[in-house]
Amino acid sequence: MARPKSFDPDTVLAKAMGVFWEKGYDAASISDLTEAMGINRFSLYDTFGDKHELYLKALDAYSDRVVGGMVERVNSIQSLEDIETLFFGMIEFQHSGESSPCCMMHKAAVSLAAVDEEARRRVETARDRFHAAYHDAMDRIKRTGAVRQDLDLNHAAWLLMITKSGLMAYSGSPVPEDEAKGAVRAMLAQFRA
Picture (cartoon, rainbow, N blue to C red):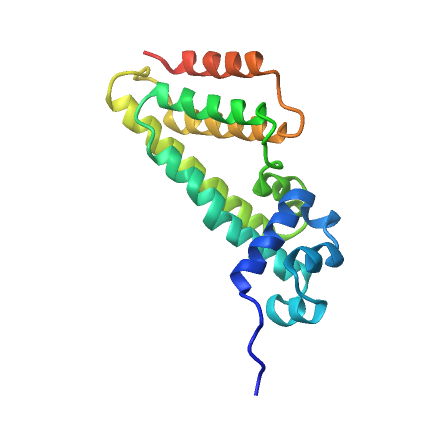
């Protein structure tokens, strides 16, 4: 009969997610993971499989918890001012000194996704969720008459995503606040009716 686990798998998975989020896949050692998770190697392997399987589960958890929350914020956008507020909030957070590490999906996209099909699939799923949310937001705004009627919503959604990703890539060394906000204003000016 199997012994009951002395830890909550979801709780320790969240701790592993934090390690991968901070260090990325390659730099996170098994020792880093077990120390942060508060479990031994046997428990890690028995519960989550190898490091790669644990990473994929951590990406799934990140997608549910972090990406899901960010997509909800995009889903609440009703105006270009809401977009500006969202982006300015990201910029101000980066300059607050409380900034978290670069987006875990972004790290996966520039490292493991290039060589790992499972990681790539998860990155593409997150990307598709963001694109759909930004596209829907721009469609809502377009119906109010606030943006150019000839604006290609697909391209606008991609521009918003690329801008967000670009800002997040500089989390550790943020773009100067005035310049970043000016770039967001310039982007939104291209959308206005």
